[in-house]
Length: 342
Image (tube, rainbow, N blue to C red; front, side):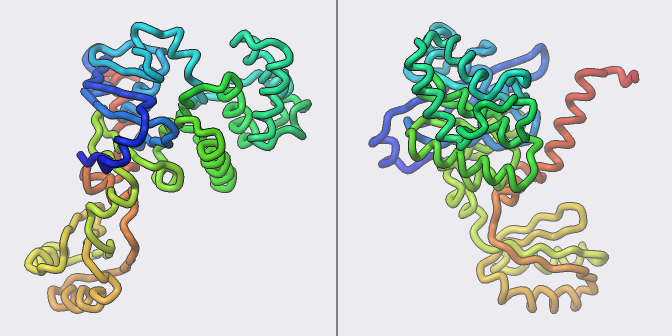
C-alpha cells in the first residue's frame, strides 16, 4: 500500500488516527485490521462498493458502534473511551435522510442547534452562516418536504456544521441523486473544505466523486484497504494509457501474442473485453489491430483512454466496482437467507 509523501505528514496535524481496526459481526469481518491517519483540513475518501466496510468504519469513528479490536482517535479523543467528547467534535451526514419534512429548513437547524446547547443569539448567527454556505438562505422558511433531493442533502450538510465540528463525515452524500445535482453537491463540499478548513471524511462508491473531491483516497474491498494514495499516484501505478478491445472471437491466440510484446505493460480480460496498459496508446492501436488480424481475432470495438480509478480498482481487486457491488449484494442476501429459503 502506498503512503503519502513524508513532507506532507510532517507539516500537518492528524485529525484522525486509526491503528489495526477490526470489526466482526458474528462470523463476518466487516473491517479487517486497517490502519491510517487523516490530517487536519484534509478531504479524505473511502472508496469501494456497498459492503466493503466504508460505513462500518465511519460508524466506529463516529462512536455509533464499538470496534472488536484496535484503536481509533478522532480530534485527539479515543472513540471507545471518550464518546461524548468525540461526538462534540464531529458532524455526520448519513446515507439515509434524517430531516423532519414537516419543519422548515431553519426549524430543522434550530432544533439541531438546541440539542448542542447553543444559546439563542449564537444559534441565529450559526444558522445564518451555514444557510449562506450551502446557498439555502432563500429557502429557509420553506417546509423541507418541498425541498428537492439536492436541497435536502445541502441542508443536512448545513446541519452537520451547525456546532462547528472539527471533523465532518459524509457517508455516500450523493447517493440516489441525478448526475447534475450530484455535481452541485461536489462543488459545495469542495467549497466547504477550502473555506472552513474542516476535515472531511467522504465515503462513496462513485469513482468520479472521489477523483474530483479527495486529496487522498483509500480503496476498500472486503473490509481491507487495497490501496491508499492520491488519485494521480494511484493512476500512475498502471503506468500508461488504457486501450480496451472488445473481442468477438480468437481471444486465446491474440492473448498469447500480446504477452510477448515488451510495450504491453499490463493486460486483463473482463467479460470478453481486453484491457491493455501501454505508453502512447494512440500510436499502438494500428499495431494491435494488425496483430489481431494476423491471429484471426475479431475486434468489434476499440477504446483509448487515460487510466481511471475504475482501472485502479480493477488492478488491485481483479474486478470492477460494479462486479464488487453484485458480490456484496449476494453476500448480503446469503446472510439474510443462508438456507436459500424465500
